[in-house]
Length: 275
Image 1: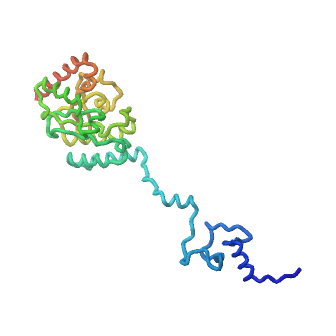
Image 2 (image 1 turned 135 degrees about the vertical axis):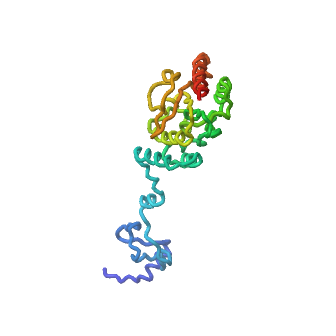
Image 3 (image 1 turned 90 degrees about the vertical axis):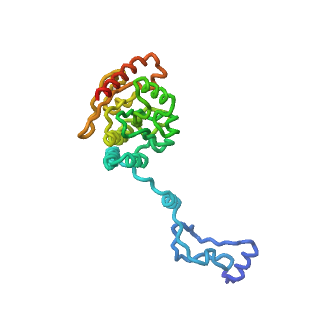
């Protein structure tokens, strides 16, 4: 039967029946819809905004745009080269401190509370180098700031030295998370800074405590075999005399070994007294 449909009456019927939107015969992907596509009519008006808007991007594209890409992480060899260049560019202790505090390529820095750099007089004849910071040193930002520092002062006093006669430096500027072992990569990234520290201050003597001795000398030998013998530390064109010694914290847990530390201190006293 041929029927003529009055579109105005049909739309009025739809409105009375509660129909408030229309659809096409085929689905439309609104995410890729062209901006100039004609918007469907609903109840005699446009469903879209009165002002033209930019097309909606897919969710994956939006997430990618909203999240800023992370800063590129250099390869280890490049990061070590950055550390070497940063250290060599330093002319003073203040320059070096700033370079260490702003060095971004060692992951230890991100988890530490403070950069443990140094304390005391950089012009002192004796430099005492600590290993990586412990929890208390991480909180204070100073090397030898816990009970081991108090024992160290007593050890120095036993050979006639006051705390002002030494310059105290941390070989590793940041505490490793959970006091875990340092990785070879972390050691390599920190080494240029402690080497430059020695170059700038040029101490007459270095007392390397515990693991700091093997680290500075680049050997796997433990402190038990290193202690008791003066070593020559070659840094660039210069060198420094270094005496490995048990760390004061280790002596606190192993008091029977204090006799060996006393022998090492006497060696230090004899060497400094000869000059």
